Length: 443
Figure (cartoon, rainbow, N blue to C red):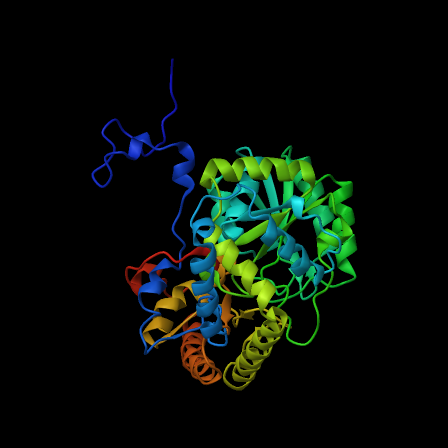
């Protein structure tokens, strides 16, 4: 019987990894983010990081949370430290339905909620359940780098759908569906971040939401709606979730990482009942059960604290930082353009013609500022003319200084491009230096 070996494999592995030839084929689809080298330098105090998507937790009521944790351990420690249900604790699932009601998902059944280890695990479980190698996932252009990593590892074929300042363009979605099917490929789902998109910062308009839901239901394309930022609108309540327009056609992913704290690693999937059953089985196979102490701590927080007022405080803080970012861009980088987010963590900057954000990044780090190249957010290597800037973690003063430093790099690059033409030099991102891969949700 003949076997098909990976082209880089051999009976002895290789000099760096003697087990190279033994890995499953899908293991070869695991790739480090092209920005991993950044994270060895952005923690230095002299570097202003406009790169990571870490929430700012300084306004959390840490004293009260400490008291709550102490009370939890002293009164219910035996339960908190024990295994739990593979689907997740019923009390927290009930609280989650209350959270989702703020996003237009009214009357949700707690029995169709599955608690996961962050929404990242829910992404992975959904991909495991639905994707055979070569199946197509449609996703926005650009899209969340952590999702791209999951889809690539699961051997999906990702196809981008154009978007603008109002989110996915319905006519473009219909055209992409026709084109993919004409090529003989199978479309399994559309992955979308409709609110305060990562990385673009834009929001799918109210007018387009029922259109996107109707197109996908008509074409039998499951929607995977990822909504970590939905409650973090600066000046308005959330728009209705896609799930509210298509209850049977959408699996909704939520997370406490941005609205509360990422350290608990608690997220959820709200799915049609049959999909819920599969998700529970897949989750039990992967982790047995989510953390009981994390679930109980969050349930106590949602029950005993005015959590929505805390969310409003976060909104105000992020709105101030976004304003600082946009004002600094207008002052220092008028030769660029950018999106104007109404919530969330990010703005998407378009560079002057001929500039390459990926090759420019090492020089930016040497200027003591960091960002994420737009190439990280595309499956097919697009995006070199864009960068994602994050305003969630630095102070307004740091944001202003970071943009000022960045402007000196952009202006110098533009002068060289004007003088010598685009592509006058290329440098690998490894110039930045070795680093440690970040958690995907920090991206």
